[in-house]
Length: 289
Image: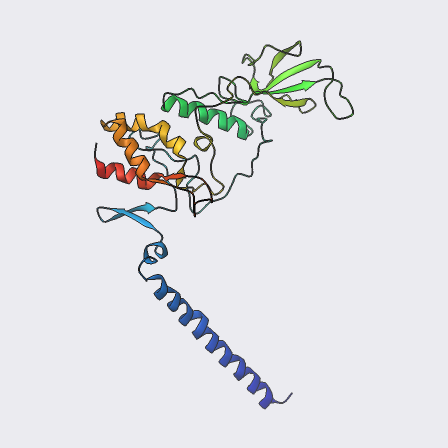
């Protein structure tokens, strides 16, 4: 290939680069920006920001906590779902319904290891119940707020089921805790010794008596991103009395605001009814109290 052909090819490539840069790097973004400024689109394109007294307080698309500097819930505000609410570090915990055994006893010291998703849910449920003056009990949780899970040790059948328990341990209750049940199939239940491993046993979660919890599921579980701005109408409903008392207004007035800010299913059939927490709390501040 001679120099003239090489120069011609590089010149053509450079022209293509400049033309595509002008079209895709400049013209197209400017066009999209102009379209986004049309009435009805501008607010969404700018991030669905919410303001009060000329100050941006957040986005209707991203949740945020309503707590004090120590992380305690502010009683005059509706509370969001559990979550980190850090837009720079979003993502699910990847923990599922089988994450029910704490590993906090593995190192033999309180605070070591990791708390299971089940125990986190149990602990949150008790905290929400205390805040809202409700019974925070829920299935598969002990009265102290840890997962009600047993390790049943003994001979097994071909399917791995223990046929004759010889030892039973409440794996999430570290000694000297009193196990949530005294016996299981006639065998005395023991508390878990710090540092002991009970993986040899069959792990059995125990439902208990709290079949229908008063605390809704979204009050004790985070969303997939940890940034969900919505709560269920059921979670909003159990917070009405607290918010009304803190603001010195009637529960009916607060309940009316909740109803005004309750959104239906998208397109009438997608998702579930929901309440935007930030929008509701801003409406409360405008209402007064």
